[in-house]
Image (tube, rainbow, N blue to C red; front, side, top):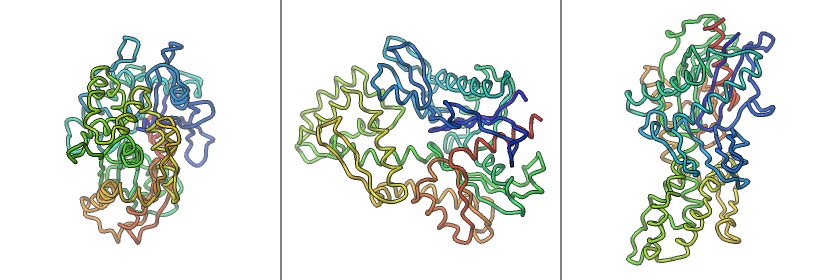
Length: 420
């Protein structure tokens, strides 16, 4: 049983192992951080103690104020020119982004081996339908980069499976009749859809190509909603969309970079900080520039991004969230509501719902023929997203899987079929 399955997600990751006594799948999730079965996809290079920490510990170390470099959303760089580049750690050394991904995969491999009690050299890795939208070459490159990273940490044999197909395997284990199902995996970086015929008889087959009627996906998901929330609720308090003395909007690139997790550290480069200091004269209201520079000087970018993510989660099922910005300015706070989320994220919601419709259209299937929509992925906690997808298929049953574990479990089922 020297194999595992890895769900390497934009926001969260998990590892599945074979377990004969685990009903109904014969698969269990390995502990990956204390007793947790999932962990945030995060690495912190702690310069104070000269160590690397992962997951919740990485985020907590950063928030606790240790000197170092926090990296999240690493999956988002696969297939991009950034993947081969290096980034400064803050102590005069640098590390390639792909090497950071390899470090994280190595941590997951160690967790798998600790739980299995033996070396693990074979793995099934999940992948989105598209790592990169509308660019087949970059998409192939992204998978090759992930495979290279997995080989580098000691996996000798690697297979890939689409993440929504993995969710199909998880759901299928509980069915007693055949269904045509749209699997919607709405994660942190991508929204992926697979149209699959599932059922107890089909589950026994290893070759399922004929049961898969279509795949589609868009590179729009949870982190895009985080960015929208941060721009509207936080960055406006730092001058986003504010005006200069001539009534024109001030340059906005700095705000988009501060609201994009993997670009935040680029804002702290000395040359850029110096340039930003010189823009104070641009602002008709200098207090906005003062707040912006306070955020940059104190390196609050990741903390504000986390605040925006928590606000999104807080309003996801209705209600309001209060964002405490006292780190920026004493007594500064902003209230954010679900109606505001709906307003600012209309384009993202529409693109995700249209991708769901396109999956059926490309397969030549009518909405009326769909038996169910199965939701998985962390961002299915966003009611506005699941309702928009559900409204596109009003006659289909709505089924909610385990938001963070369905894909990992399904990948584990696929690994069993391949390797046992």
